[in-house]
Image 1 (cartoon, rainbow, N blue to C red):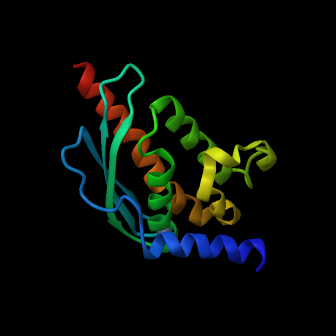
Image 2: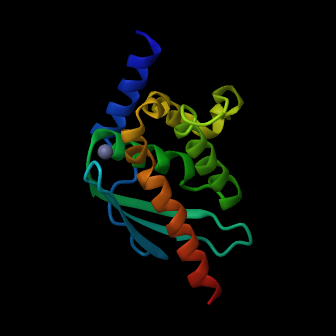
Image 3: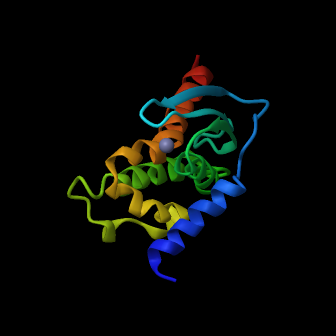
Length: 155
Ligand code: ZN
């Protein structure tokens, strides 16, 4: 099996049995993001701990859309749930860099495989600009949900 079909298999596995799917409750913040070009939708909730470096205590996503958008939300859950934000946010940055690797001068070899985990399977998606937003949808939603949750805690 070549790398590309292996990656497709990883994405399909996450699509068929997504991790972190469901309405998290209780939660600190909820955001709703859409990708109009593809019709993907995600509603994402997060719960953060009260530590100085807050832990992602919970993450839940519900939505609909293409296999890439749905699988990507599942991989997001695997990579950031239970992690402190000091670890989780750099993972989001790494994934964004991976997605823009084909259209920027990011060198994939410099990215951290351990941070990316199964997210590396989306490497091929970066070659299709129309699909990049599908892959990034839940990750951008997560970033906004964390910001919203942090703002609500300091108020
Ligand atoms: Zn899509």
